[in-house]
Structure formats: structure tokens, C-alpha cells
Amino acid sequence: MQKRGNGKNLLMFCSFVLTVFLLFGCTEKESNAASSGPKDIKNIKVGVSVGHTQEERWQREIDMFRAYAKEHGFELLVQSAENNAQKQVSQCENLINQGIDVLILQSLDASAVAPIITSAHDAGIKVISYDRFALNCDLDYYVTFDSFKVGVTQANFVINKVDKGNFIWLKGAAEDNNAHLVAAGQKSVLQPYIDRGDINIVLEQWCRGWDPNEALKNVENGLTLTNNDIQAVIASNDGTAGGAIQALAAQGLNVPISGQDADLAACQRIVEGTQTGTVYKPLAKLNRAAMELAVAIATGKDPQSSIDSSLGVWTTLDNNYKQVDSFSVDVIAIDKDNLYDILIARDKFHTLEEVYKNLPKSEWPEK
Image 1 (tube, rainbow, N blue to C red):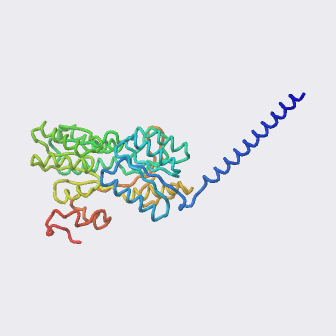
Image 2 (image 1 turned 120 degrees about the vertical axis):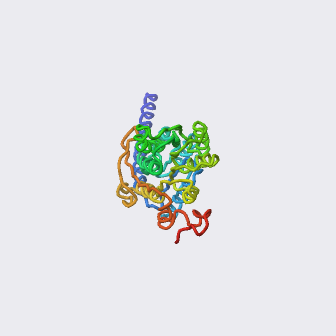
Image 3 (image 1 turned 45 degrees about the horizontal axis):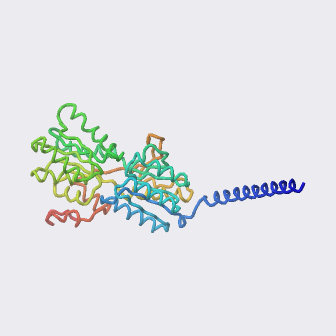
């Protein structure tokens, strides 16, 4: 009888412990749910992961991110993977473990970031894909430029100068979805000329990692194939344009060539006459749109009404998994005629002294 009593008591005790545990668990969940509600901007933490800082534009954008966070009084954590996709995954895990509220992700490999998105969602963190579309994953938001229009603009720069002859076509990084969109825009302009036989693409190559050295080697190969008989180069950004121009200059050639990003070196080449044009992507607008979106998410506000409508437009884009709410910022064609007015006088993206330093002052525009 005593044993039965002990067994009954033990059973009652275990039941009591289980009840307390369940009640505590429910209370803790309710507490966590309450703590995950709207936050004051001063208490939020935003994580930023970029693929690398080798290009001028990414250094600029990190500075912009930091300036916005400082001005609005919230914490910003920034990581750069320096062209190592696996390192980017581990860095994002680190940001997630530091308790960020939102992750802004500029992916190195658009098709390999699903684990990052999954880890963020497991921690209750939303992800904003920045400039480069994260593919095949449950992405929350995308903030971008119109990359197809970038490609159209680049091709038109060249076609408006020369629409017949041998062309070299330098595409961007094959692992970057934006490079494919740019190439599609370029093709939409070039294809009718190719079909008519007016343009002959003697070499068509991707430039891994948007590497100027890849562009230089590709153009050298194209020049060898044609015995220097090249009439134009379609390049996909200013870095690859620079590599191409180096190869052309070594052979005493100066042909129409495009770019994008409005890098300082490219702007110098434009006013000097060795690069035809660049596509200016107003980084300040894109950067601000991403920050406003991140703050809205972290503070519990409506994301789509929280971004200044003067910065761009909302749309949806398919990332091969879902239709993603996307905010698109327009781009601007820049050549020798409008470079000063837009980049220097209006947006103060560069200074007069920086851009025109290699020209005699008699050729500088008046302030």
C-alpha cells in the first residue's frame, strides 16, 4: 500500500511539474510575442551584407548606409564577403546571431543565398535583397535599379555612334542575375542589327566577378581574332569598360564603348573621349529606399507606404520562387554633354576638379 501511495504521489508531482512548465512556456511565448512588436527607431538593429568593396560604388554605398543610420540614431552592422560566397553565408549567420531586426543582402551568387533567407526567417528576420536579386527563395523584398534599361541604354550609346561592323560583346558576371538582365537589354537593341548582318559579334564573353582583367583578356582575344578590325565594344559596367579600353589603347584604337555606375575613372574617360558613356544609377536614391524600407519593417510600419515615392516605383518581380514586392529606381544615360549638369552640378556625385583634372582648364565647363 505504501508503494502505491508513493507511485501516486510521484505521478501527481510529475503532473504538477508538467503543468507549471506548460504555463511558463505559454507565458514566455506571450512575452516574446509582445517583445517582437513595434520598436522605436532608436532600438532597432539593421544588418547589411555586401559581396565585396572592390568597386567604387560599394564603398560609396556603405558610407551612405552608415550616414543614414547615424543620422536616425539606430545601430548598423556591415559585413563584406570580398567575393567569397561561402564567407557571405557565415557572415550573415553572424549578423543574425547578433540580433538584427532586418537584413539587407547584396548577394554574391544570386542562386545560392536560399540558406541565408531560411536562417533569417527561422529567427523572425525579414530580408531585403539589395541591387542583386536573390533567386529561388522566399525573399521578402527587393530594392533595385532597372537593369534591363541599363542594357538598352548601353547598347544605344554604341549604336548611335556606329551601327555596322565587328563588335566585341562583354557581359558582366554570369553568377549575378543583374548581368543577365543587362545582357537581355543589350540584346534587344543589338539583335535586329545582327539579324540584318550589319553587326558581326566576333566575341561574346562573360566577365567573371565583373573583373576588369577578364575584360582586358577578352578584348585582347577579340582583337587577335580580327587583326584589330573592331568597330565597337559593348561593355556592361565601367570596370569592364576600363579593362577593354586598356586593351584597345595598347593597339592604338579608340572605338565607341559603354559602361555603367558613373565611376570616377569612367567619367574621366568620358570627358577625355575614350569612353562613350555610362549609365548613372542614383545610388543615394537606392540606398535611401533600402534604409526607409528596413526601418519601416523593424518599427512595425507599412513598408509600401514608407518609402518616398519620389525615389522610384513599387512593382513585383518573379525570382523563380514567388512574386517579390520590389522597389525600382530609374537610371540615367550620361555622356560628355550632360555629365557636368547631372553628376557634378545637380547631384554632386563627383567634383569638377576630380572629373576634369586630366584636361587643360580651358576645356573645363564653367561652374
